Length: 291
Image 1 (cartoon, rainbow, N blue to C red):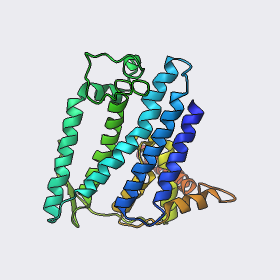
Image 2 (image 1 turned 30 degrees about the vertical axis):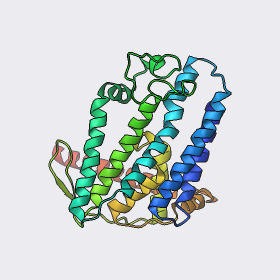
Image 3 (image 1 turned 135 degrees about the vertical axis):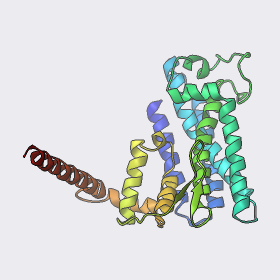
């Protein structure tokens, strides 16, 4: 099952990455992403309908890890597509109000599902057999966010998918808020309003792609639950740059004949040099203090 699920996910990621290369508008790219995710989910559902899980642990793994990974992408793309479809005219103030409306709605969702959200965020597995196995659905539990297909659903796999998707959508909205105006300001919950000015990325765009794919592959951002296109968008916004043909760039990186991670090696060398310099300076200062 694990190898088959990995192939499903790898194929899906490749198809989603290819969409960014066709020059379509953002709206059309999100629409195509929705269709690709829907096809992937249907294919996975057909496979599971003829598959017998080896044990409860494998069933829990599928409904807790595998299905939500793909389903959450589908929900996320729908959220963003609808957000863009209904984006109001009327200038920056209207867009800010529109984004704040969605952020407030998301917060209500997290508050309403606080107990299960905390369970998910804590990494607990105590209730997994109840939440993520078929036939364990208790009618006394919450009925909302429960799919009717009991052969392909558990009581909480859809809710988990929505939580993952809504976390990503929240990040997307906050980034869109930051993009408004020339001097971006984001009111963070429980924090003072801060202003943001763009630093300059002085390495090459290919170096940025090497770092971006490394962050994605290592699970360093959102535990890997983030699209490469989102990371590219964050880099473009933060550094005020444009990164074109990211997929082609990573292919070129993979074709390097000698050292593949050139930029990562450069970062490692820079860090070691910095630490050595700091250590040498600390030794010198220590000796001077002893004089």
